[in-house]
Image (cartoon, rainbow over all chains, first blue to last red; front, side, top):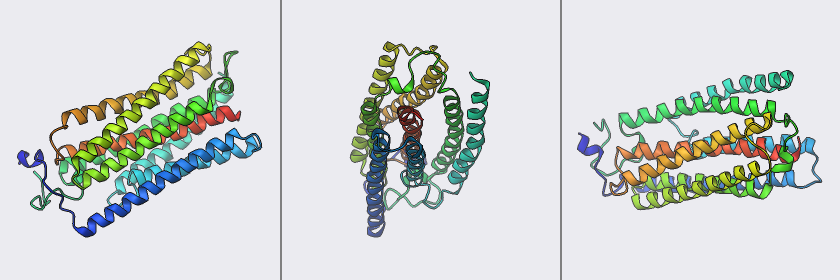
Length: 114
Length: 206
């Protein structure tokens, strides 16, 4: 059956309905990209302008980064789609395990003073 | 063996997951990405712990320039979009379109890498060697690790483009392109945190 696997196709098997669905999804992806660009610019502006306090700007840009993380993961990497149960499980465990590692490193290295 | 997927009607709507091999690649790659998350978290933690230890050398505030980081961010974000669009072309069996979008992705990635090399050379000229301070080592290691990922991704996608430049979309190469595009998105996700935590927080003086 290996012939089947390395043979190109002359057409797509997608029905009109499926094509419409995929085009709609494509539109959503482009919109989320525009939104990500907007968030990025917002983050740069928050730091660039002197009028915004550092105490506010830093938590704010961190929040923007988290929003972008979800947009990338769930839209661009399709984590929101069905049949993505295990990928979700892997990434969530990755994030859950990362959190204590991150906090421990920041606190411990801060205490030892390099 | 194509399994239960009917190939007589044309390319299946999810070519990357219509073979067992494709499904396994997809699953295995997500395990890898989960592991990568933790690896990058440890490097981020190290950087955050050490970033104030400049040992008399240049500090983040003195070195980083906002326009450069902004251009790099835009390049990588856009390349993420082109690889997303390439996957839509793949699903629609539009091979030429996919190839062009993948080539654009590689070019944008190359641009990013060029700026990063320029940036590092510039910093070395300003007296920030790898062993100058704890800040320097942790900065170069974290950002350099990301740069190495970009380089690897570029080599990977270029190899795929050359290897399959004439073959059309098949059930063998669809999962390969799909997984490569997932990797490319992941690189972009990591960069989002680098530009926020390393650059903007460095410039902002937090």
